Length: 207
Image (cartoon, rainbow, N blue to C red; front, side, top):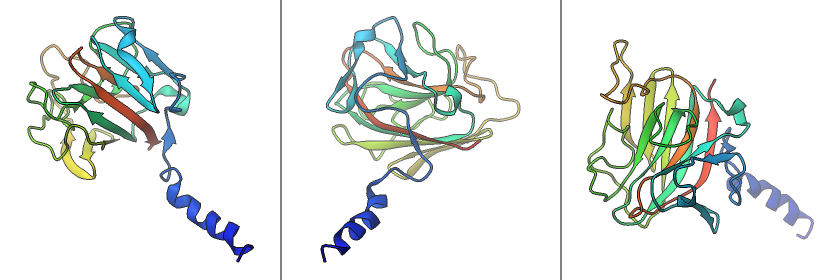
């Protein structure tokens, strides 16, 4: 039996390992590979293996080396938890900027009860979601898939967005950068009244 035990443990390892093809973008301990905007950098902190966003507007951009730091077609999974009346977001196809709301790319909303009616999983101002299966105080996974011009978004394996950018696409007013292309990812710290937790950020490049 003693000889069989190591073999049995080895067989069990894949069940607890990384998801097939996914690469971690965050080490769970530091901001290595990530860069805060200059407007309110203290908004983002690390506590007990979680990125905590609480404070005035700030964004945290991925600037690491995975896939050259640029992603076109991909699957992204981020585990998220919100406190009541909190707002946040996950950006894709974006680019680092020193301050302000990201001008390039799309925002996937994080919001289960904030006064903004656009709820978690929605493609902000493009394909919004009004009701969600997720709740404050509970971890959920935002799963974003981009293939060509097609964007699919799941919350805990429930599809909430299935959107394809039209050939004659006109971005929302004041959001000229909301165009499918290529870029990096970013996390949002929205306002002092919001507290959002992020962890287990992983990507599977598809190109």
